Length: 514
Image (cartoon, rainbow, N blue to C red):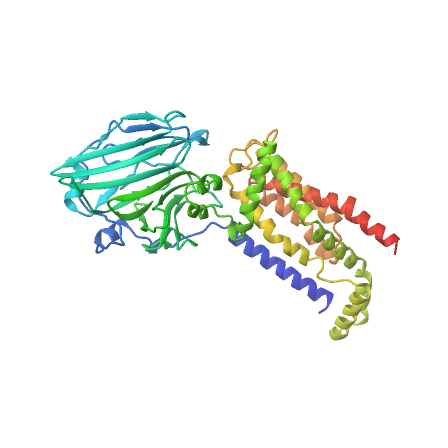
């Protein structure tokens, strides 16, 4: 294979890699609306224990002018006395557009955590009577760290009891629903809904907003791909940074699914009383979620190299604990990654420099054996062997580092830890774009300098085309999170320092002693 053919092959491989990465990480996912369940489809289907109960019973005759209000250090929640649903759930520690995040949207066919019973007489009690709470208002604090809200309603010998257990400084809520007939507990089937959508949060360009479920503890399914399945570990509504999840008892599964009703997303779980269900309503933070349910950890997704990204996030959080600044933590972790891969980076730089020095001799061979590809290939390989140069030595070390790069890249793109985290001066939110585009410009300049300093075996025409790459990347990164741009710019600066002040000096020193 001649020099031009090798370059063409490398160019094709790089292009394929870029296209694949772009498609996987950047392009928003689309779904086929034709496969989604609609309200009309649900009402016409035969009801089974694997479908959401959707009874066309008369509307509720009770109003809810005075909901129960619970206040914790993490959130404020209002619970309806009409049907026991959550009317509002305000996260105190997170804001969107300078307002606290509200995870609950109050409009829609079903209310959040509304229950629909299969038995018509039980459903009639649910629709026509009001819950009586054991407390109308409660504030949790250090001294009063837990509180169990008990809601009861009765009619015609049927009693429905719903309980919510709140724990201060936790985002999970334990729930239980029980039905009694003439004072005796009975098993009653019902569906519990979450939705519509996830509060007033909007879909991000590089994130999913909608329904998601974990099946068989390993496979994430989204939106219309979620079907009633006996091995669903949890089902949730998610945005880039938050989620509202329904979780069964440990080591159990739920029959659950997804509905699209009037352009709104709902999730549901089919359960029978007595039911024990955990609700998680909060940030997609690994540290917080792990303490609730390790299986829910899978809702935090950092792409195909997430198994690398999650440990890197742990290290980033450790560095933040010492430095108190995520921007500085990103810079330091980037330095550690460069240090870890220094032997490979040095080998790559050395190989590229050796290849660059051989270019005059390679051109001589191309002229000498013009029109004789077999002889050119043989002579080229002999030249490489003579000078102990591996033509792919500059590429392979870089390829090995790609999984780590992509893993960290996705952490910086999606980690809630960076949401609202300031760095310095004008960078007040590492999850948002640079308002003045200074960081992307610095990144583009450093990328250009790095490219000029890196030895190359490309011909002048190819080299000129590659010079446009920094400009393209600068425009691509204008609207990327500042934390991601900071990482890329830092990596470029460290590469320049490494090549100019370390690698070049080492190679020159070795050449002098040969």
